[in-house]
Length: 142
Image (cartoon, rainbow, N blue to C red; front, side):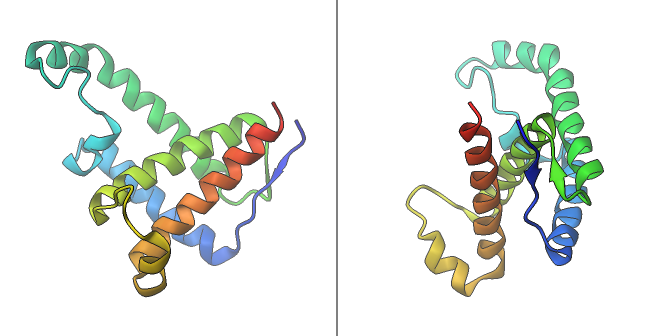
């Protein structure tokens, strides 16, 4: 796979830098705002859910933080290699989940209309576009 050109200007990279720092803080602090990133394995069985949390949470957290580290290290890059691009898609998805929950985004949300009038929805729409661009690049190389 040839390198993927990262279509970001300086202000977009700075916005992402802030979002990445915030996401890292939420994950490391086990903040409830990051709960969507770690859904219950058994919502109807508290004992099973707690056991899964005990066994798997540290591994899941480490994987998310590893991907986040890749994005933080490559934020200034002009191009990304395949593995870096995969890490970006994971982190962009995490950002979208956290921000989507904050904004109350559902499948019925009229994002285009809201994005024209609200900067928070505009950031969410931009993250969605960026992730889709990267997923398309990965899919085109299958």
